[in-house]
Length: 320
Ligand SMILES: Cc1cc2nc3c(=O)[nH]c(=O)nc-3n(C[C@H](O)[C@H](O)[C@H](O)COP(=O)(O)OP(=O)(O)OC[C@H]3O[C@@H](n4cnc5c(N)ncnc54)[C@H](O)[C@@H]3O)c2cc1C
Image (cartoon, rainbow, N blue to C red; front, side):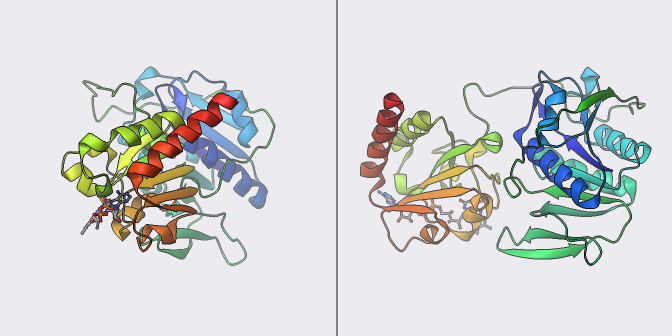
């Protein structure tokens, strides 16, 4: 059986988990076994609907202390559930929670692990999983040798597959270990779309010259309903908050659309955004390295191009 961990925040299932279920269900089909999912805490969504993405059964451990992630507690519960349910593969999304949980679960199960997987395993020669390495610049084939395997799948690398069935939902009973941390305060940013969850991201670099010019970028982001990001020198100079910094040393994202405005496309920046589905680059220098990674590029002055793009988007929206 393939067991998929479902990640939630604020009682909403994260989009990355739907992809992880689709991956787990496709893998289960390949292996000729069932795909089941496990979720902790309470969510405001129908768990039976997870059948749409291929889960045949959803095991839920409802307890509000499990609504927030405690890696020690959650990894122990997932490993114990995997043992009780005889799971042979445990799948995670390679997002912020999956990156913390997957290795801890692998240790507890004595399982071989591949993080950052980007396709279904080949089972012709053992169990070989393709993963990205060197910040997405290369691929490695990793053969997992253990009987239980743990895989964390890169966001946007497999896609969401519709299976159009309904999952049965069952309460799972497991002893909950003592908490290792206590969350004393949560401060949420208001209004912002969280970068890691955003489908659309508009990002700015040093080409925008200064924080006073960010209005054109914010207008475009608002027109698109996009989250905002920036290059490292921009956050280092305090033009934008540090939580917007994307790249090798910042947040790594994989939205459907990444619009890069006045960003050169240095390798360290690309390391955080090159898994985006569609990349649009606006840069006045036709030799800017970012154009090599772009799906669409506009060679032009951001101060002329961006307001025109925003006006065109608003016009198209008004017409629909
Ligand atoms: C160890 C290490 C880690 C790093 N980690 C990161 C990281 O995580 N993220 C990151 O972003 N960087 C990172 N960097 C820095 C990285 O190497 C680059 O220096 C940085 O990404 C450049 O930022 P930028 O593209 O905004 O600025 P610049 O390199 O200055 O590029 C500005 C771009 O704007 C264009 N431009 C100028 N005026 C206009 C205009 N009017 N209209 C349109 N385009 C215009 C220019 O042609 C140029 O391409 C790291 C560096 C190191 C050494």
